Length: 323
Ligand code: BMA
Image (cartoon, rainbow, N blue to C red; front, side, top):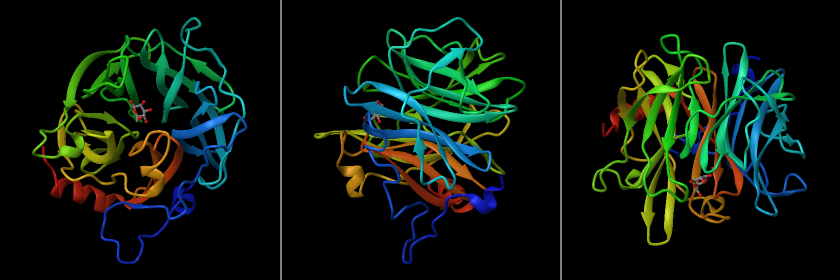
């Protein structure tokens, strides 16, 4: 599919000088879009066939967390399956899973890879692949518990699969750094390297408690562009905002730039009010080489989109970097 023609897109509103702006029709997916759902958020989409496909986090009315496949012609109006994904065995035996949430989707070579936070006596990173968003094949978990936010690179780096992640604890983790890990086979992961830590409070307080990878890295002339979440602890709890960073093309364990100001922070009503107030949580981004459409979860309740020009975001990241 040619994303130049079909990328979901809304032009910058008159008077807006920000590098990223919201869809005025947010949220694009209502919390009750399937019969069982309490909330639909933190979800990931990719181009698929003549349109788009995605994997959606739908918490049900027992607030059990699970992931569901969905399809769309335009990337904005979605039909989400009413039943969660049932996995077949991929590169391993059946792996027990207590819950699944916060999926990411990434095309590598010949198939779509899904990663998510997988309950395996505590959260870790689950991995699966699909060719058609109908049959899904579950593989080995990437890590021991505890870890969240597994984000694959869309191509191998020096012959190895590469993944960003955020080691965590079993609860509402009060720390969080972004690491990169490598695998020759999507079974064994190693060569773990620390890339980014939270910033000092006085430098950039929106990302001073914890940070985690968000969207599949986008290869640009300047390096790998990622959108990530950063968290500050306030007297009303955690506040999740979105920033961008650029990693070295040849060695993505090298951080080149990261934004000192946020790109997007909770301000719209649907980000301020919901099951968890004050959350912007990016999980995927579509781009056509020039423009980007970012999908983010808002207030742990609904799915939203935001837009920007890649060149402007890269310039903003370089010109406002606190590396
Ligand atoms: C994180 C994850 C996300 C959630 C966020 C804000 O730890 O649980 O799914 O969006 O907290 O509640």
